[in-house]
Length: 295
Image 1 (cartoon, rainbow, N blue to C red):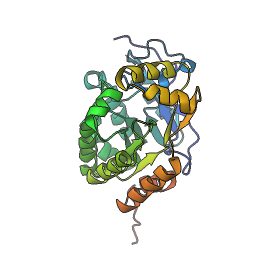
Image 2 (tube, rainbow, N blue to C red):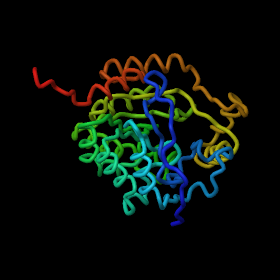
Image 3 (tube, rainbow, N blue to C red):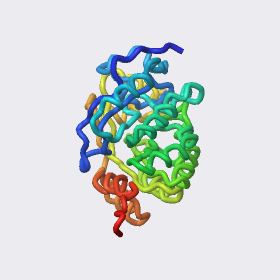
């Protein structure tokens, strides 16, 4: 374990109700990721993360967080998981994320995160308490319905079935939760049956939304790593990528419009949100409404 010293923790973001999951600040308590996902964009050279697969906690994170929250004039939503999973394996012992959530509850901020780890179910009761006074949104990344394929694409993290068990636990505690169905990998996870099955599993386990962009990105660093994984585990698929996309940055799945129509149709059938505006609106609508003394 190699701890880091951070200079600041909360990075302001321009909160939007229409274009993405709403947040006021972004926070990373750890640096790096050990999940080993073959497609991970954070492995790209442009981020300049040395030894990316070594998770390093920010040693002074909790003291910084308290100081920065106390300095804010207004509360808001703090989101985690943009560059490092807040529920990586070190979290089980160090509990930085849990302690941060306890602090967020104390100062009455909102909390959101994106994870691939079933460990988030540990904090279901705590997240439920946070949601009594502020917005909460728990997002589970799921790329494929099949556990065996999941193990190849995301080798060192909870398989899909375990992630949906965690969603079930969060939902049973009243936590607003759903699925980040990204990336969608051309020729691997873009078939209609996979997309529909993930939407169905989300609904079956109490999730309220699924978000999907129907493609992936590749750039220097993660492109080479991804192509090596294709060569090893999916013979012939690397050639399909080179033939269809060359060295493109954005790789939209073939027949994306038809895939989107099927996805949207399944979301409607399962009564799930798929637009950010609807997701954010429900997140805020779940906050307890203050009742008047004169009602």
